Every structure is written in C-alpha cells, then in structure tokens.
Image (tube, rainbow, N blue to C red; front, side, top):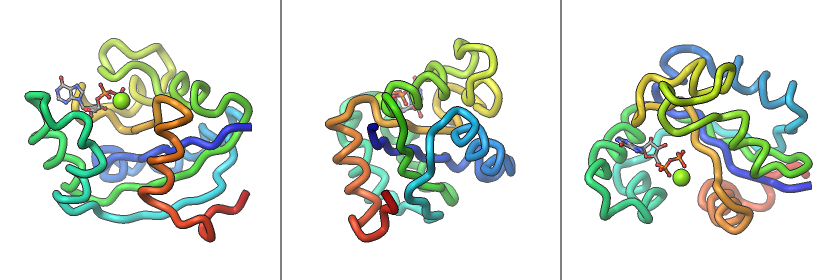
Length: 138
Ligand code: IDP
Ligand code: MG
C-alpha cells in the first residue's frame, strides 16, 4: 500500500466536478484517507511548486493555483503513486488518455484539473506540506 497526494485544482473546483473526481478515485480502488478544502496564497503555491521556479510558466502556475479553492487529498492503495498518475492522464488534457481525469475535466496544459505526486519520495513531502499526521486516517 502506498499513500500519495492529490490536488483538485481551482479549474476543477469551479467546474463543480470535485465529487466526480473523488468518486473516480474510490471506484479505482484508491481510498481517501485525508481531505481538506483550502485556498493557497501565492507564497504557499510558489513553495509547493518551487522545483518549477526556473520554468517560463511558473508565474502563471502560481497565479492559477492561488486563484480559487483547491481540495487536497491523501489517497491510499496498491501502487498508489503510479495508479493515481494513470487515472490523471498526461499533463496536457489534449494529449491525455481517453477517460483520464485530465481528458475529462482539464481545461488546458496549465489548468489541468488535478495534481498527483510523481514519486513515493515526493508523495511523502507533499503530504506533509498539507497534512499533519493526526489528520490522516490510515
Ligand atoms: P504534472 O502535473 O503532470 O506532473 P509537470 O510537468 O510537473 O506536470 O508540471 C506541473 C504543472 O505545471 C502542470 O500540472 C501544469 O499545471 C503546469 N504546466 C506544465 N506545463 C505547462 C505549460 O507548458 N504551460 C503552463 N503550465 C504548465
Ligand atoms: Mg509534476
């Protein structure tokens, strides 16, 4: 069993598809073991995406991620990190696999509905960024 961090991004919360996204995780065998709705400040969004700070779209990414509420989730399941990335699909919704969350609910390459940790190591760091141990029910 692995835990991973998922974020439902501001485009998806404003499209009113958060329930569909959470239902999909559950259908796919990923359990929600922690969840909160919050709005990131620009500073917190920049800290979360610090590894991308050298990239040309960083400013746009920080503005977008702080533009409205998000939902942070800890998902748990067999091979959870990889499984979540498969369910999400490719970064660009236009190139994402049919039926993937980004294909179904993403807007464009920047506003792409969901975030998911890309490794077990990053999952641990990203979960700690949003949650105290006492908030995780696993
Ligand atoms: P990932 O979310 O699939 O892991 P990354 O390459 O790690 O993709 O990029 C992080 C986030 O930065 C993406 O999910 C997306 O919101 C944003 N992003 C990536 N590429 C672009 C781009 O070319 N233009 C604008 N935003 C982008
Ligand atoms: Mg990434």
